[in-house]
Image (cartoon, rainbow, N blue to C red; front, side, top):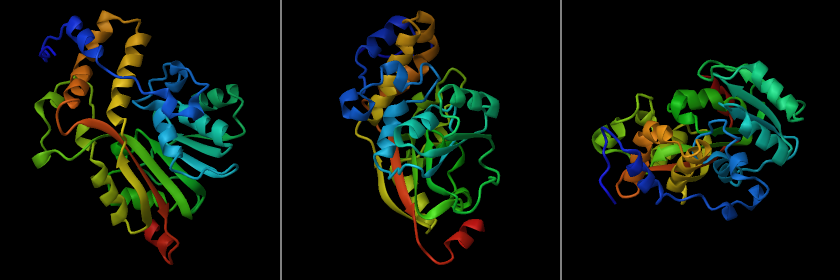
Amino acid sequence: MAALNLTKPEPTVSADVLSSFRKVDPAQYPELANYMWDDVYGKGDKMAPGALYLAMEMTNRMNMKPGSEVLDLACGKGVTSEFLARTFDVNVSAVDLWITEEFLRSKFESAGLGHKIRAYNLDVTEPLPFADEQFDSIFCMQAFHSFGGSVTFVHQLLRHLKSGGQICIAGTCFNEEFPNVQQSQIFSITNGWDAEYDKYHSPIWWRSLFESTELVDVFYCQELDNGLEMWEDVILYEWQRSEFSLDWLRESQWLINHVAHSRHHKPYLTHFVISAAKRYRHGAIDQCQR
């Protein structure tokens, strides 16, 4: 493979690299058999890597029962909320900071799911207007690293989860921590967009965080076997959606470089899922409220 030019990328170099990228095998997700590639990514709603493939990885490690109450934390444009309500017949509280309630309500009504999904425009780092033990499940995909990397926050969030309820988090990560908290130089080169790599952590780190709350039992926490493929897949999808634009290649060269680098070096970009159950324990709710 030709050496990548990190300062003045040539689109032809990007195209050569992309020819080696892999798509996620949809056969791994029979539940999504009726979904086209465009449907998996919300028809261009700027879903992060993994999209509904990652949502399926999460729900495979949860116990979604019809009629249960689910908090979809940082739901974005509501693709995951619709997926949960439609696929599992659950009631969803869809919370996001950047997307307005009006937009979400209109979208859910248009999808015929207005009676199943409630929309909230909230800053999740502030106290949430939900009752103690209101939810059977908490679902957070591709966002928790932005705001949830502290025991204090997890405690605050868990007060709203029923005893015995499940919390499932999934997202982008590095497979292991960087030595001395210093990232490889290649990951410092972007187009100016904050990739938040400094907030990415390994699955081991996330397990330690959740266990340190002493409020949950972690029953799954691993890097996904196709975690890097999810990065490659979203790049291939966005490239196709751009109609194979050279301008898109130039703008995305930095990310293509990061993912290509991850195929041959450690630490590398990947995805993880952590799923845990809130303990039945005297005083657990009081601890969450502190």
